Amino acid sequence: MSRVRLRDLAETLGLSVMAVSKALRDEPDISPATKEKVRLEAEKRGYYPNESARNLRVKRSGLVGLILPDLATEEGSNVAGGFCAAAQKGGVAVLLGLARSAKEEAEQARTMMGRSVEAIFVLPRISTEHRSAALETAKKAGLPILFFHRYPADVGPGSGRVSWVVRNMKQAAQRVLDHLSDLGHRKVAYLGGHSAARSHAEHLQAVQEGAEARGMVIFGGGQMAGVKPEDGEKEMMKILEEKERPTAVICGSDSVAAGASRAILSAGLAIPGTISLTGLGDEELSRYGPVNLTTVRFPNLGQAGFELWKKAREGEGEMEPLVLSAELLIRNSTGNA
Image 1 (cartoon, rainbow, N blue to C red):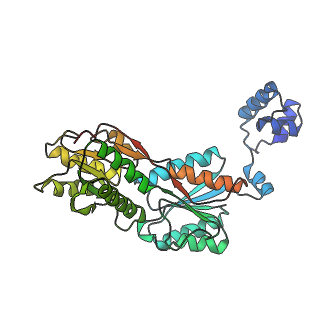
Image 2: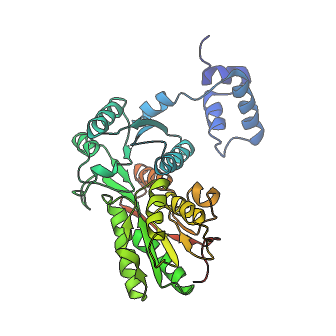
Image 3: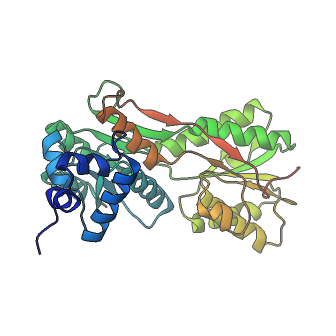
């Protein structure tokens, strides 16, 4: 069975091809009644626009690539979910690839370029912040590339068609510290993320400096726990074994905070009655984990990154690096010291 064309719809409805095309695009010079008639006929006959032909006319593929290290993590699923939703709304298809090594990252980038993607978006593996195989591949082809959460250390402003979307981790730390300070907390523990991640290191430094400025003490100077709930649980158990306990614990992610809360509750201690607890990210674990977690929320990186590229694509601005602001969400896991 041959594909239904605009011309077929036009002949059936007794309209011009141009009128049918405008009706489907919801142009203002076509009456609502005509638009509805065209829509119903198109739906009845299974018509859908030939995007390939349209993209050839405007010299665009209507396709972008998204490379992730993993879809199973909160980080990966959040970026992918926001990105794909924004792309669908923008009429752009997404070619998704997983890369767990530098070799796979380069292979995915080359495969995507072979499919004529207009841009490549990457959530880098933590261990590749100093070098990106996807970046090198895209730069050789002059293709726009944008990073989420972190970016190669040798990339800076003026690096051409390269950009990134990151979270303002210093601001996130300040929001939490102000809140805990107002509640009277002075003895605080810190359970951060991955020691090799620049953004996690920035958060730790901001917490250390901010705590000192507020007359607060960070137990042990702060620990980089990891990125999984079990990491937070393990490190929290160590803290609870000490003779002196903090009145609050600041975590570098909601996942780590979920693990920490499990350790605290398993020890028979109350949250926030004995220990207040904060996370970062406003992930599902902050809302549906062991406690209703006070945390820091950012706009979705995937959505922000796609929109940044799309505006540059439409000539509405440059693809400049974007730092997303933090918002504190106060829930039931924090209380007076």
